[in-house]
Image 1 (cartoon, rainbow, N blue to C red):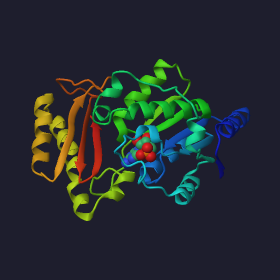
Image 2 (image 1 turned 30 degrees about the vertical axis):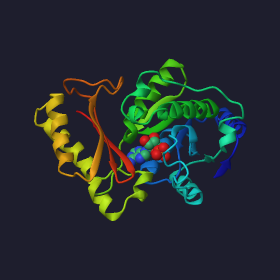
Image 3 (image 1 turned 90 degrees about the vertical axis):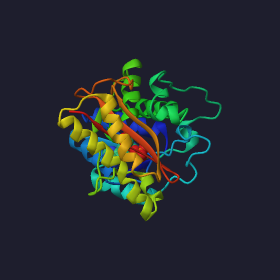
Image 4 (image 1 turned 90 degrees about the horizontal axis):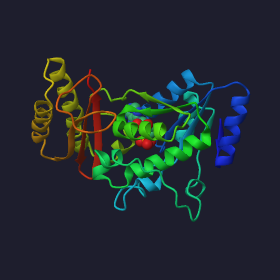
Length: 280
Ligand code: AMP
């Protein structure tokens, strides 16, 4: 498996593969790869002849007081995992390669970027949309693979791809969880043993809302209230948001319908975690 460092190398690779008749799959990541990322790489390898995994801790999606500097980095292990799951190349650019000196161009998905995580992390989705646009343009990918784990991010990126009429199809893959329900996240390494237990409140609240919907409760007020009660039982955790929203617009809904997004975010100690489910 090759490691590419520049946009020109990635573009040249993509064009060469396409000339040989391959479809191109891209899996954007920030590294510290785990089984959630592995599932995306496997999905890409299953449906695309040539697969690139990008590993780039994107500074513009971190706020000034967030964890950019201490974000986990494990490049050699990441490359081994990517290769084992079927990646053909890893794209690991420098910050300067993605953000040329003097650059002033950003992608702002107005409205959507200010909702859910965007509300509590100002500028986050602007950073995400900008880097993903750059990656999609550089890779000329047919398909790009993202996890439902970051459901608001998916909404922002779908809107961006539609608005810019980019040629890449966004493919969304299911949330991979630990056996006890905790959604895998690179940030789980920050959790102490105790916090790891507290963190289960997120997946518990998600399962609870799914069960209520399955039992016929569809009123948003009742569903979010039930989740609030679950969080109230774990006062060590600070809720950021509990929301039932339209997955395309991220606007609150009154009634859960198939495809509605139930999403939670909470602070467990100094670690902010998210979880969600799409209602059936
Ligand atoms: P990150 O490296 O955290 O930026 O994540 C890169 C991609 O992996 C994003 O599309 C995430 O949604 C996805 N991802 C992260 N955790 C999971 C998970 N537990 N299950 C599925 N996909 C995930």
